[in-house]
Image (cartoon, rainbow, N blue to C red; front, top):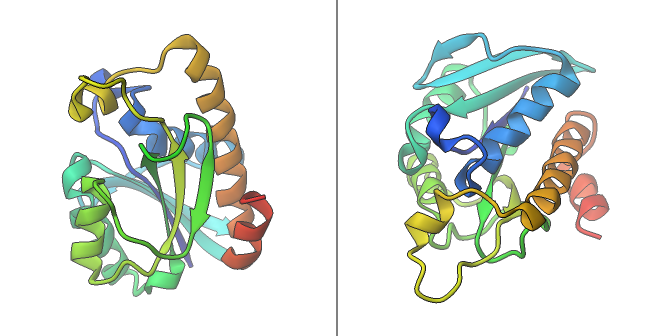
Length: 186
């Protein structure tokens, strides 16, 4: 089993905001893998199907970003998954807009969604794909920035990053994460 989680905030007003790139990747994974998030449990919307030799789950926590761990860990516990079966996709201020970076562990930094997951999971040792959203101009508050939409010149870079992150996530359904990481971090 493998669980691919995209972080974001529920509701139309958050669509296509910087903080919702994780949701965008899950939407694209749904289209590519041809299945729906047709179950509403564990404070999230999820679905699963057999992909190759594995049962693959896609999850959008509906807890709002800062409580993401409250959705992910109960689902993992119910289906008896361990941390090696988890991949989290989220926005990252420390990467330029449009860059992606795959890692197997790491501190949550200032990302409250990742802090929640680390707190509920009890470890920072799990797979992740960070999608760069860049930093705001001096004087712009971080919450306003992450809840804002991309300017047109960044939007194209983000669309390409969402495509690449989707490709990496789907590649993980067939390969070891270390191989995927080496391929997509180049």
